[in-house]
Length: 328
Image (cartoon, rainbow, N blue to C red):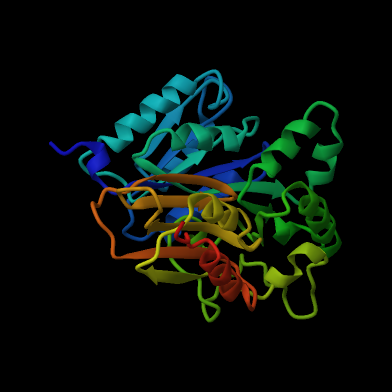
């Protein structure tokens, strides 16, 4: 039997957000869009009865339940065990989605998942209830926890926009811009989001994606930090460099300064001082560089996925060129 590390890593997405933010609705919407993809959903609810798992099971048979606590603390061992069992399956899923309980830290859950090389973190999606966000942040008991959830996100989703006034959406956007300035921001109507948040597929501008941060005619998203993202869809670009080796320190510096709209980056590169090619993954400023499975490499290839502005690709290319190692 093949070992789990002989397979390509399973894309993993952690979904977080405070109680009532709309996580279960969003997951059910995702499952209706998934088509033939095998999606495993790992659900943690706070309490002895996992209500969320029962609600999601109506749309998907592959639901793994973790009950009675915060997934990143009191049942952390169960999470590790569940991940190991998923990675060892003969029919491994195309995507793993972990729904964190409303009182847990999705970033800590993602960190646990990244310890297992059978998984690759694609995004940390955190939902913010437009109607309740200001009240939650002002609450002395839960305010810090909600801020922590938002700060760890690679993508922030304003939920329940179909129930809110534009002034509510604008106010929530202003609050979020200061808590996670590098996170890509979306607004969700009825829980709909583009599949690009979960898998490496592009949401092209000509597609009908009601959830993307595109205001309806006559409306405008007032959060200045996200103005450049309003009219764009998720796209990707790739950069190839043949016969060059990167300086590891300069490359890491370049990857830390990627455009604010970057959801993730990945690639295989030649690194100075390394006998084997290096595999790299960047999600929300968090970076992992490890030995690649292949023995040799003739060119470095990097792929960048996100919501990009004019000139972003050229700036990334310039940064990468500046990261090429020079001879001593």
